[in-house]
Image 1 (cartoon, helix red, strand yellow):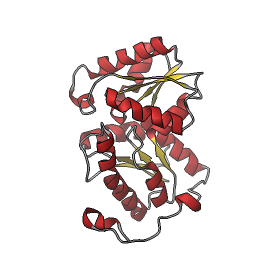
Image 2: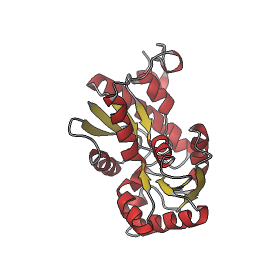
Image 3: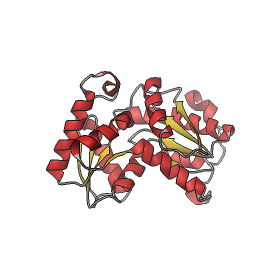
Image 4: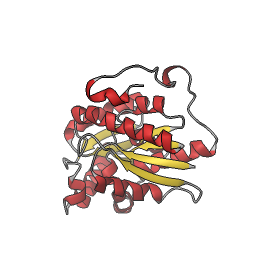
Length: 242
């Protein structure tokens, strides 16, 4: 089987981090690659960034279909463009927030989310509601560290670790969900430091896609998630028409 992890931002260094974390969990018969969006923001930290990231994400999904990819991971905690990507793909498409929250719900009665900037907390709350995770999600906390600083700030690991420790204490939660794909490589360190399960959505989503494909499951293709009807697009989106 072939799985593609798509980074919806344009920062190649983050894509490499994401690729390593996904590759570490796949089985020997799974071919995994990672794609960086060719258009959009360098990082996704607002509703505007998220909206502007979707065309590049969808272009990557469409290219994956041409390349024979079987399933996809959307490696941004806002799960941007998830529904549209599912319309385009024949196989499963899983967002990392979706997978991380669902995984955490199996490990205790409640989890905390630790994300980057405070302005993204509302989006995480919306996703918890969408995925039916309100009963498990005990709190969403920002460490006020910009996404790209996860790669460059020498104190990033310490900042995120302490935010996770404080979240567990405040929420009396049983697990922590890391609310950014750029935090993926911090997962094992934080788990060892704070003593509760810490879920990296990149790994969780990758294994979810692999499991669905192993079960022989693909997208239904009926109704809402059928291939979009062909139509003409104009202007900057002309190439997205059919």
